[in-house]
Image (cartoon, rainbow, N blue to C red; front, side, top):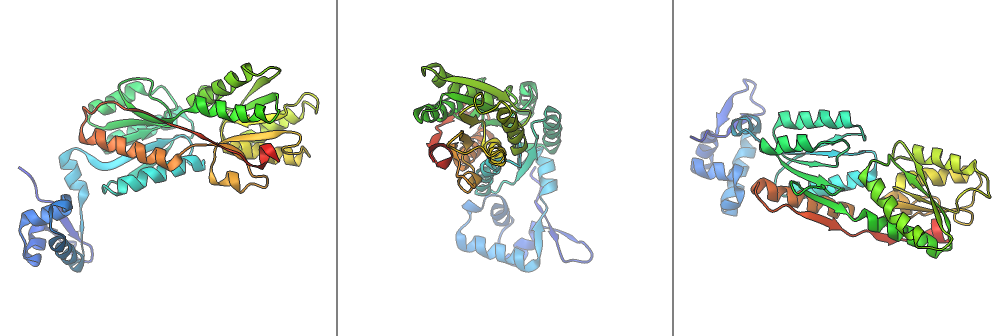
Length: 348
């Protein structure tokens, strides 16, 4: 038997809790109509819906969803775990997710793993305890068993920014190997032959696939060579430290191009080379990845491989909503295409 949704009078000094019966009486409509306004507004005529919402507003009542969700055993909220919330790439993806979920009146709870498997596990525990209806995750650790458990307990799961590698879960990603190829191809087309690929850890699938794509181009180019400089993190600090190592090699031994695994690393590289008096792109060309907003506004605008960030988020949210609606929905493996954006850091 369904239990009436509860409302709470926000301004009542006695904290009196009221039911939809009070709203229905004040609005002169049935209980079912108020319930539909709260839960299925599309089923109510616009004029009636507006009238009931106006009564709710006039009375100063707000919904108490917690009890209703507890009884239902699920939470309308969606959890999302990203690799690094400081990276504008992930905030743009999350914005695309949030906008789409907002259209369906579902809140987004964002967790930042910081590329740390232990923090990732903590967030998985939290979202499981909160009984979120869905989870979007860019994995760090070996989380497949955890994701299976969440799914078996009724939480929809979709992998974001990397392919799931299994037919158990849908995934939304960008073709990182192709991105590596088009970035490296641009560098060799501009005459660069000594290319350093900077990024890491290598275990991240995004780094691995971008490196593979770049290596394929270099292997097919006569006289070209590629050096991999692994970094512990994917941020500007790691980029500066890697660039300092390369500058220390001396003019004859250092690369004539640096392909960074993301734009934050590339911006750190650009800063370090500028401080060292290395001319960009005359001495060393720099290619980034993601095309975050900061790339175009850098002191020397940064060439980059653009990922469709907000589109990635919207498609991920749509896919997750489909799985929430139908847990038996066909598993989707969506791969979006990257795009080369050329600026002064590679062509002067």
